[in-house]
Image 1 (tube, helix red, strand yellow):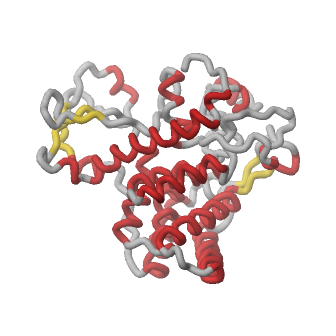
Image 2: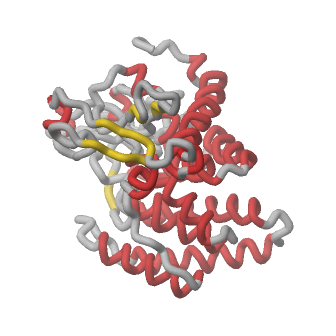
Length: 343
């Protein structure tokens, strides 16, 4: 999934479930920021207030396997049920690390987050949970299991859904996963996304209102899904209508929730908390050249005495907490059963 679900739809789902506007925003921002939190910063270096964050995403798939393994299976490809019927492949191969939708492990992650009552952890776990629908039948590790059959795919490292490109992440795309048996091969992302939205809504609503009746829960869920389906609209194979859909989500927020859905700014929390002194090329730019820049930018807290009150700091602490909790779960139930090299 991409920003359309992780931020915009998550905001709508949280708001409709009963979270207040500020909490819905923090959940949705945290959910999307999992994908944007891909740089390790050293804040107030050599000072009492020194802080170093963890990353929850990386675009550098050439990182050492051990580092990638602390990111992909924990935040994006939660291992699920190897015998899940939707995972049946032409070659008959199964894998303990295969991502499957709404798995026991994924439910444990989101349920633990909800029990924590920490809005930032809830947002981060939301990202991991809903990605089990979009990223199903891929694993967060280098393995031929992920390999697609095309010429271009053969030169792409077999990690996650790299071979499939953006196919699993675009909400209005219909595509074919040729690795799967015929009855599983046709993938309608809208159907996957709406199933995940319905399950997420149920989790949120029962967190906000434990006494919500089954009838009310199901009625509200069906109404929400109907409106989200309408907002996604027609099949869009090129993803060219992305911005049109985003405007629909913003309009839906006003109509359904009665308040504005702010446009996402990936630097907002960072810039609210941190001063940045650029030396040479900006470290957090998207330029490939930054990795060769010998000068490191300098980062300091805007309010050294109150940095622990900032959204960015709270999110980063939630990343660390979520990583530890998920690692402990998966190490006990999955990783211990495998013999993975270089870990």
